[in-house]
Amino acid sequence: MKVSESNKIRIKGVIKRAPLNKGSKSDQVTIVIDSKKGLFKLRKVGENPFMTTYFNDYLDKTVEIEGFLNNNQFFIESIDVLE
Figure 1 (cartoon, rainbow, N blue to C red):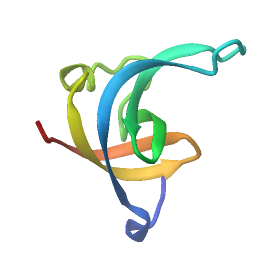
Figure 2 (cartoon, rainbow, N blue to C red):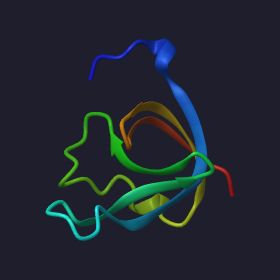
Figure 3 (tube, one colour):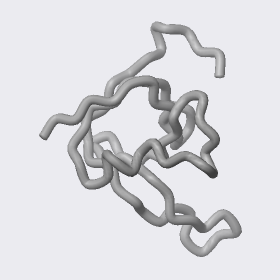
Figure 4 (cartoon, rainbow, N blue to C red):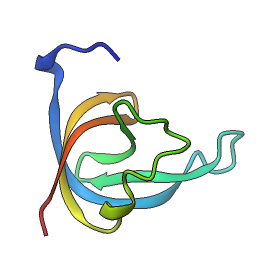
């Protein structure tokens, strides 16, 4: 993903598993951040989205993440636990 550094944003919220696209062909339970700005599917830059265990240590924790938002997916470059 090639994006300008000026497009980086930070979001605070709780990382959890949640259903997305319920009732559609792409219905799935996935890792999201639940924030004041909305619910965003999380992806770690450079990780295979189907094989990653990167977010397991962050489940149910309040975090601040930095990266890039593309539609409803947030591509994480860094993550800080706040609690």
